Length: 143
Image (cartoon, rainbow, N blue to C red):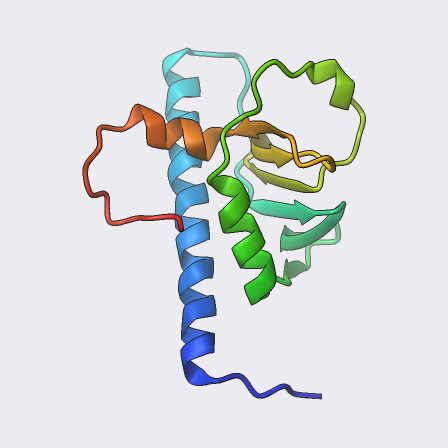
């Protein structure tokens, strides 16, 4: 069963997805660079980015090797809105230990973003990356 999509909507969805994946890739490269500089013993495996929403893999390679891409316009907007929020201050990390996140973005085994089911942001490498960069036009805007 096919659903007709207006060409402008299809283009917007594609641009949102490209923008999100570009941001994930940028943060991953920065994180891996930092890990290499610190000469840590940890060597992350190269993997594709994985995005989980409410415990379900919506983008990335599944355990069986199949690639899944279930990013819809609504999911992309939800992700982009969530990525703009800072980490909640004064939270206890052990409060969320072992709990499933509402949104989790990982790349190369590193958690780049995590929003808990109560909407608390516990990890946001994207926000930290934006704050640490000088305020100049990078050609990438998450909005």
